[in-house]
Picture 1 (spheres, helix red, strand yellow):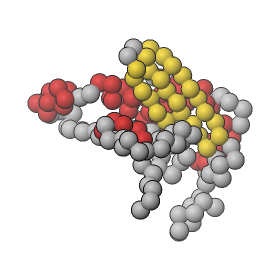
Picture 2 (picture 1 turned 120 degrees about the vertical axis):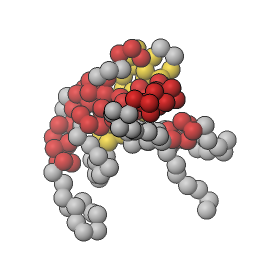
Picture 3 (picture 1 turned 45 degrees about the horizontal axis):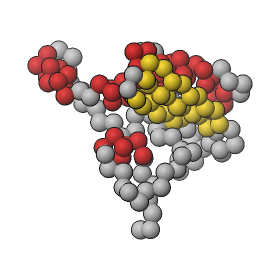
Picture 4 (picture 1 turned 45 degrees about the vertical axis):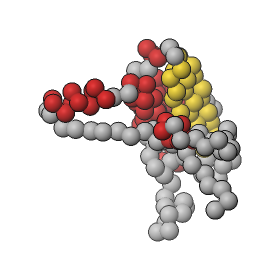
Length: 154
């Protein structure tokens, strides 16, 4: 093939961005794209200790903020919502967006905060996005869309 599009966030998190890549700056990834998560039974304290020892706190924070943004937006795989949280030293930079299926409408939110403010940051950012004129109307339209048997939006 001559070209292929990969999620930049996932490649960056894995340290696999090729030297000859071209970045599509206008595109944000799906929330938590490229993040590997491991779960265990809540009562399994031995495994929880192992997982806590290997947890990458910056990635945990980024994934948590991105997922909270998506949950507040009531998004999922078929909803055009994107988000990227990045820890840079003591700061947490968040970018999130929501688009109409036809691409004619887009709403974005950008926020830089202290890493220590990450709890609840995804909800705050989603609320800021939804407060923009027209955003709440668009998310309701998206939530109420119907799909046909071929996966096309009606």
